[in-house]
Image (cartoon, rainbow, N blue to C red; front, side, top):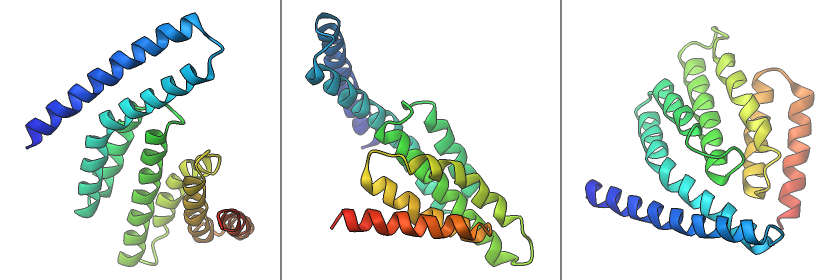
Length: 175
């Protein structure tokens, strides 16, 4: 099944790539066309998602087995395959953050006296802060949900309070 799926993914990427080439020609002819620009963005997103899905799947599997370092390494490798700011990019940085938080939590459970777990929260911080400027409201909301936990564990209580306010504001907007 894996072989068939890989072939299917390769075919899809090839077809998306052909479409992308055609839209890039159209863009050269009509650089002001929003329709053409939107399709180029959408096609790049689809290609990114297909190429990065195996990386995410492998990272999730490693995480389930408690190999947080391996999962983070897998996700980080995936970053090189996607366009910064794309949907696939945001999924990967969210997964990096989550894996760091789970790892930090496990470290704290194992030895609550050792402050080393805070390093994992600190590692998640830049990715979560970057996600707060996502165009996707759900990604933004998820980022603030995790930031509350990160800030609180790092003793940044003012920032935790601000993150709670932002999260609540986003929840109210989504009603």
